[in-house]
Structure formats: C-alpha cells, structure tokens
Image (cartoon, rainbow, N blue to C red; front, side):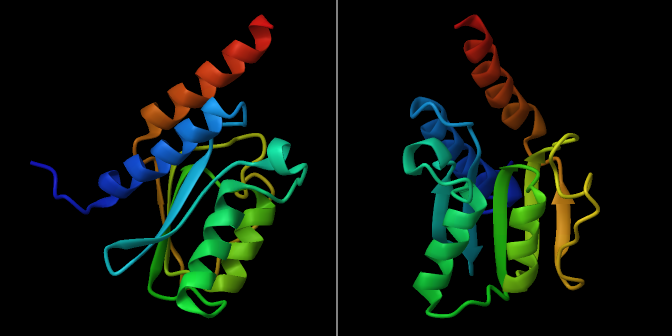
Length: 148
C-alpha cells in the first residue's frame, strides 16, 4: 500500500501541473513545493504564454512558495518536479536553501547535472520518482510537435 503523502503522491501532483502545461502547448514540466505535508507552491512551464524564458515550472513554484511563507528561504521544504531542473533553476534552488529536491525524468541535454551546477550542500536530491510517467508525457509532447 502506498502512503498517502509519500514522494510518489507529491510527484503525481507535479505531473498534474505538467499535464496542464501540455494542454496549454507548453513543454510539460510541472512542480510543487511542499512544507509539512502541504503544497504551498505550484507551477508549470509558462515560457510561451508569458514570453519569458525564466517562467519554468520550478521558478513559478518557488515564487509561490516564498510568497506563501513570507520569506525567500525554503528550508524544511521539498520541491517535486517532473524533469531534472536546468542550471538556472538549480541556481535559484541553491539560493532558497531548499531541504530536498525530488525529480522524475533526467535531462541529459539541459539538466543541471550535465552543466556541473549544484544544489545547496544541505539539499537532499532524490532522482527518478515516477520517471516513466514523466518521460512518457515529455515524449508525447515532442512527438506531437514533430507531426506538425
């Protein structure tokens, strides 16, 4: 039996955000920030809609969570994101001092690990939660783009 509030549960919430991005014709990446078992920030890619290269799911979720908490640090929070963060998002996460980052699909081309970026030294990293679901959504999106 799956615990109701484990990493898979919250990654499914991030995937719901990714699905929303897919439906809005954005690259389907979704993110949620969790504190004490509660989602305090959500985001999905909105770079096309906002005409803003920084409007990544993680950045939007970080901003929402910081606004909720009333401060810039996300200590004792966890970010769940469907795709490995890029170096820009990893840099922002570094400065938030977030406690934990959990992602689904790796991004060998643009992920932060490829570029040698780092998270805060105290940040725990968990990779591959619901990796297949995250990867499938991304593949479906790019397949649909190639058909056009």
